[in-house]
Length: 76
Image (cartoon, rainbow, N blue to C red):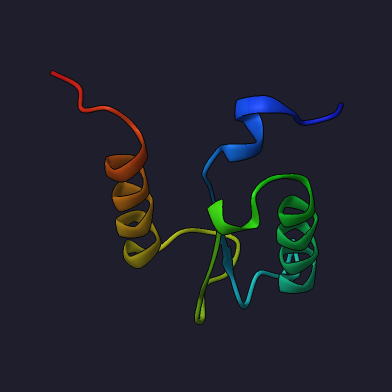
């Protein structure tokens, strides 16, 4: 559906391995461009990870942690 109001300002972190055999990097790139056309492109971050397949890595998890710390309130 249409995105409007505060939803246009939502922060998005999209992560992708450059060696993913299940979801090629090209599809991740197309997805991030579509997101940028729907919401504020300044709020969309796309990170790629060298050598990462359809999995995760420490660098990605650190980026996710930093994103959460920046955009969500702390939990007591």
